[in-house]
Image (cartoon, rainbow over all chains, first blue to last red):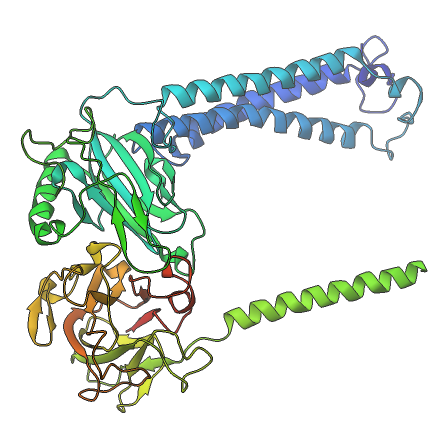
Length: 325
Length: 227
């Protein structure tokens, strides 16, 4: 049938004659199939649940699932290559007696079946992954990635908590516009809540990467970059800058927490009260900041939207300004 | 040119490129300020840490006389141009900052709030301050911030029009106009904690964060906490 099968005849010890021909392709496919099924199953059961970024948010869970699917597809490809390589080394090694010269003759002829099969398989995998990835990106509301100032894949929740993430050399700070617009160095989030991160920068390009939340969005000066996620578990997570931004880039990290809604609201109200004297000195909440490139000064562009959006109202009290403006 | 000749040229150029790379990396990594130790006090006894910030370091401290900088007073009373300070763990640090530089409104007023210090308060020329409005008075010249410890204080600027503003380190009062800021904090367990100024005071660099803001020994350093 193929060049692989056609080039051999019963002869060398170890070959299994089958009507005078050894069915190498059948052997290799059988080995590949068994190894792939066993190792894919083992990976799914034993490793899959522990694959980063975990399950703290919906985007983390979705990305974990996506990584697992990619690995389940990649593993058989890897096993296929290794199976063929190992089979060649063992069965057709030169030191075996009676092995025909693999160069030239019928062994070198191409096989239409193998070629069509290879092209069809790889095409299906690549196109399938393209479709899979696109669908996951759309259904996952951007899959935790920044979508710019006008996101097209937005969550359906009507009770979203907006959090502004402000990058500056070399620290993240956070503003909570629906809790008076206070700013803090702590990132505390309520569980079972959809969060809208509005990421911006006061100076150079940073990248907000909340690893366990599976959120990653570039922080660009004078740009707003929005990313969504919904918290699913309480616990701690790590925030890092993922864009080389200067001498203290490596120190630009902090740890955040997902806590119960009650604990979050108690924290937010306490922090709002504790920082009130400074909050009144902050500029009104705004999506972007305009730094002065030549000095320390700067200013916000207030957008005068109150509340910030119709759905980002978690913590919003009607009649109470959503920021200090 | 023969093959040997061409090979020699290629190898020669390669050696030159590698040499430049090694020179650059070593030159970047090796120079760092000396560590100034404050560990001779009795165990548990508070440590007094006195530093000053100057608008320009002057000619006596290296190759950048116009750069803004911190200096620290060692245990012998000498002003040292270093930003690596070794202090004992779990110890109260009484920090005194002599601010000789002028200020401006903060890019982010968040750094006008006293954070992480004992009582979340500092004294400015003897008066308690919890939040300083950087849009008033002389603004804020610098901050002392150890962000991994949640510690930050604004260093309020002096009058830029004062006739006796210090132009070269080390500065001293009362000869020069100064703001004296005091605050205390307790060191955590052993570790190397980076600190920095959060006012982009590297004038002339993009967004003010180059030069002295990006060079160890000027506006950032380490608190080396030892057991």
